[in-house]
Length: 180
Image (cartoon, rainbow, N blue to C red; front, side, top):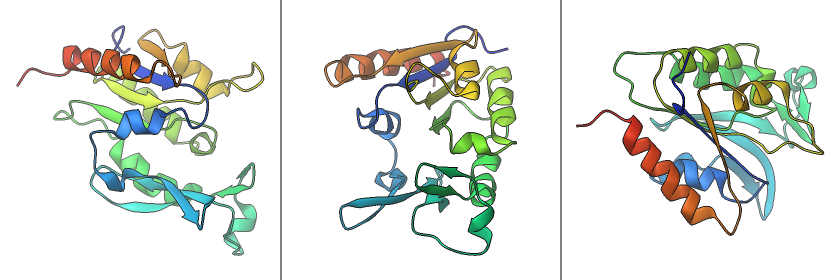
């Protein structure tokens, strides 16, 4: 079981800056939206070592995609997601921090993803992740379990508190990470 405060969760409405906060100090290539013109047409999985693959698309139309689950107008490519995300969530001795942007409805269509996240929590290695804010007072069950986990600290981001919350999170990470 993760120690109290070893799981830092960032939540807030869409577009408030959760991904920016989570990936701020990472490579610029960590952007996960796919755009055509000004329209968002999908999302991709981007690992910290720079590998990418599709997560979801509103424009894909293959015989395989007919069986993929949907979230809104997006078809979720579970196999692609799992091939990139699951190896990154393997608990290893030399890992100081896990970062997940995001634990949400698309990701939770993978039956292997949430158990991998729970193993990370059990490893006692700090986890920084973004989660969606409940819609209409209803939370996604896996997200609710994570939000209510005894080791979780939830930081709600808004346009007016972004800088203060970012500083709180980075200070908590400095406390949690091994001293060099």
